[in-house]
Length: 489
Image (tube, rainbow, N blue to C red):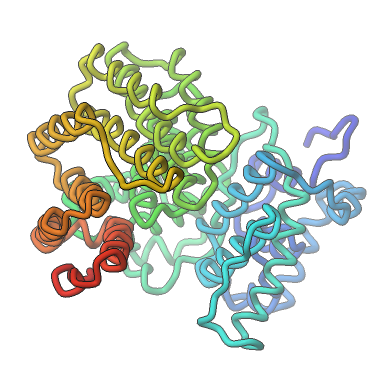
């Protein structure tokens, strides 16, 4: 292994190189990271022994064997915590650790994510979200305190990305497959000591693609199995196959209430294919949605701006370049609305108009409904802000009302169930603003009809039901008489 010159590298970077060079297995690297306290969530040696079906002595021997391959000064470098990041750097570090948490450690994922949200609120100086489900002194609360201390240290000493001259190991999961998912893997694959062969990976990809297309409810479980299978390799067995598998995984993870694992999958595709590949740029769309859904708006803005710059040099035909631009701009408008109350030089109104005009000029008809809705939604949100700021009744000009009528026709003509369902929720919000109970009831009934007749919306898009219930509560608060007419979903 090449020796480091100048600044001492972080131990995680050394272990990453060892895995990439085939000198340390992904399993041993995972055990070492956790025993050394450098993984996103800590696990005791006894817990690691149970997880990997080993003895505590074997876990100790694995840790010692990996440590002996590291430079002598690495433990000192590991003990030294760097300066805590701030601003956009803090958000990038929080997002990176959150994404790693959501990919691995199935048994501590929920507690660790809750601890990270609390830590992020403390670091940003905002009110800490309170969870009253666990009484004072409960094991879950105590576990949260320990996890916050570990995650704070992890964020402060987060290492830089490994040098590109070394093969890129997967290294994010590195753990056994959970028992409920083991039945999806053939017994011959589970029993073998090495990773599954590429034929098995190709079969998993075909099953995942079929489940994703048919929307038959198997895609979520197959996503976890695919991540587990890829983690068994020290380095990528086939970058093209892995990128295609992770592209579908990112879509499925994003649909599961914007899971941060979609961010990790998008970064992995970028690592494998480079920043200018179409697969990389399409995955940024899912990455941005997951970042926005978890409150990392500045990070989403950064990755979208960088991706739009990279789109100009994308390795694809001009028609596909236009489609990628529309895909990314649709999220950039949302980020502009998310950050409209902050000191960010990003105006949503001209951005949404340029997005719609670009869509019209380039003829990307597939994204015409999204572009039209984006333009109206921007005007609606800004009108709502104006009414709240000026303490006046909500109103929109006639031109925006005509924009609504045009968008309604475009979305209904598209035939997309999910876009029409999302449009029904936005119509509910418009009815609340106009204090039009009949419009609110009609839009809610339309959304409920979609949920009952299109089962994959409820199963694969749970965030839409959460959004509907939030809008419903807002409508009932404004007019309690609507409680009986708006059933919760």
